Length: 267
Length: 349
Image 1 (cartoon, one colour):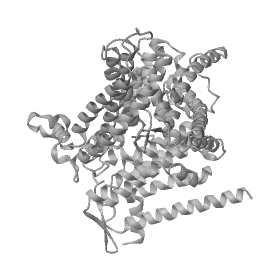
Image 2: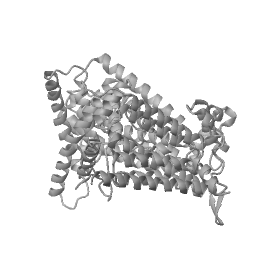
Image 3: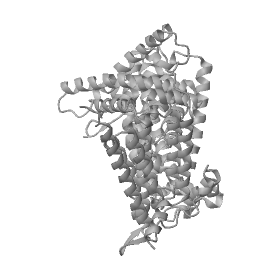
Image 4: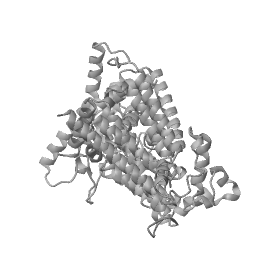
């Protein structure tokens, strides 16, 4: 499977996940979008040494994973490329911030290590939250929700259209790349002599097709904006969920639950 | 160059969202004014193509490595800066939402670093002036040379700006302990090399479009006069010189001598530059007063001012209770997972 086929596979996997049914899937997309944004904002607002206070924030994605039935393994598989990059920046912290911060059974742990772990945990939590949003909300519902939040129609329509064509274009390029490599075995990428023509050919063809596509859209009654499939109205449970999430996040931001729990056991 | 959420403080992320949002608003306004509704499907298809095209590996001759193309310059050369910018926003949004490439909170910053520079700076300050200039003379050959020069210079410059913004945004967020100078010295040379390769690939694609359908390219004359033909070798030679000049100049400034940049930012304290930048020399590095300053800004602007950072720098758990508490949290997480599994099994019979 080449890189593009893998990307296609991941896209369809996300579509499949979003098409499942669970209490989380049934929530209003706007509620999920707002609570995810609130979650990420609160997570990134934690101080760089507040590892203990940040830890309870892990419970929200864990709970969502369980209620939605989305596999944690799928999530980590998707994050396998991105996660090390987030970690990479934090890796420098232990070298620059060496002052001991706490002692664990006689072993000194420097501030840099704590800030590195905090950064890694933050990265992981944010990525999990975004993943859960997309795994439980399809792109159509998300776009309809963005429109409700007054994101300009042109941008939303463009997002929706582009998402649809990403599948078509990636598939076409995957076939082209395979065909090229079958004719040029052992060659790592596209040879310099074909740099322009390889993508250029498809580009020209596609831009012409887009014009025809616009014609057919007009014939089907398109007039500047799409009519979205009716999304059910924002009901009371959605509001309760959004508000509840926001309140819990704020509480966790304000009160160091780990410290509190720990002090119950340790004097 | 995609930034993750964890690398940004909320205040910096929000500022970048506002900046990118403003640029998007202006672009949408301009496109509406031009009233070209048929542009939307073209934008979508081209954006999708660029999205997929960025996954193609182009072999760099003479080396074992490969490069990719530069989306921002390609899109603004084909669609114009405003339509190109919106298309880039959509590409970045899809990468963020479906491939976890860059975070949801960091999307504003990513749009600024990759789309704004690539489309607006790349088009208005590089593509258009070079293409409209009489550089390299008259005729088709000269036009080709101008396209190559604009693509390469555009990609190199916009990538350098983007990389520098990444460093600036991360440093202002007070996330990494890596000193500003060292971070710059790490980022700029890498992106110089990437920019050169991306520029060459982009130039190749744009040249192909120029040969077949010149009217598709912004500002390029559809029917240039004949004559003044230039061999491809000479174009490459010109390109090499341009690339070397730009690359050499920038790397001198940014990479091999990061102190030069530090000097540029901090060295002229007596002339008030430091004050203008809102930074001072001590703010580099380990103690990172820049981080504190960012914290102060954040405190003033954050929507969670009460949860300020006054005590955020205090050690987490000088007592063991923090550690024990975290272990309890982990235990709760495991219990939730076990309960979830139990209920699912029960449901499935």
